[in-house]
Each structure stands twice: as structure tokens, then as C-alpha cells.
Length: 132
Image (cartoon, rainbow, N blue to C red; front, side, top):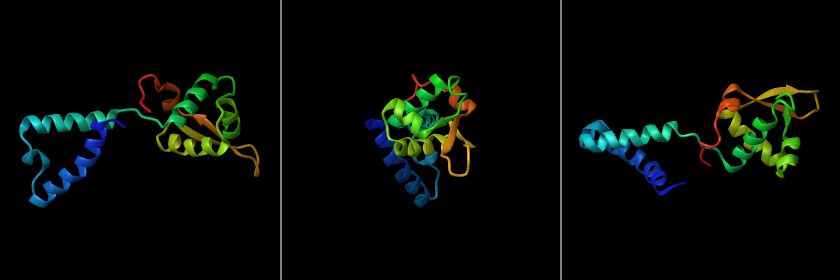
């Protein structure tokens, strides 16, 4: 995380609380120029694509090999291919699922592990532009 990102994370709740305390909006507290810059920073933060280190590795592997494996991946298999434990892959998959890049595509049987597949968003995201 950059210093700028840390500053924004710390200032955002302080600024919001102060505005609420005063009974005003943030736009009323800051000068026009400062408010425009603040809104720009928040928009950039909102639109930034970011992944964990493992998430980016997993997504990259899945994008590269989705046709080879018919877009059906086991955590154990992904882990073996990129040298991570299946538990680490499973935890990273939860974040990728919640962010909409991966979905559970089912189980092969009642005692079998979960299969994961890329969503359209996961297939099309450009990892070179993403941050870790």
C-alpha cells in the first residue's frame, strides 16, 4: 500500500465524522479545489483493480489455462501448478469469488472438492493494469 493510499484510508473516516459532527457535508468543509481533488482521489480508489499477491497468481494461471481445463479448476491442482498449498488457494478463491472474478461451478460428487471457474469478469480483467 502506498503512502497516499494509507493517508486516504485514515483521512476518509475522520473527514466524514467531522462533517457529521458539524452537520455539514464534506464539500462544505473543504475549499472547492480541495474537495474536487478529494473526490478525484476517492474515485480513483474506487475504480482501482487490486488483487492479493496470491489472487493475482491464481487468476493469471486460470486465465492462461481455462481452455486446457474447460474452465474447471480444483484448488489442489492450481496450488500444485503455482507452488501454493490448496488451503492458501482456497482462501484466495474466497476473495476472488467475492470480487466477482471466480465462481464455484460445483462438485463432482458429495465428498469431492469444489470446482472453480472464471466468470466473464475474471476472463476479461487485465492483470497487467492491476495492483497487488
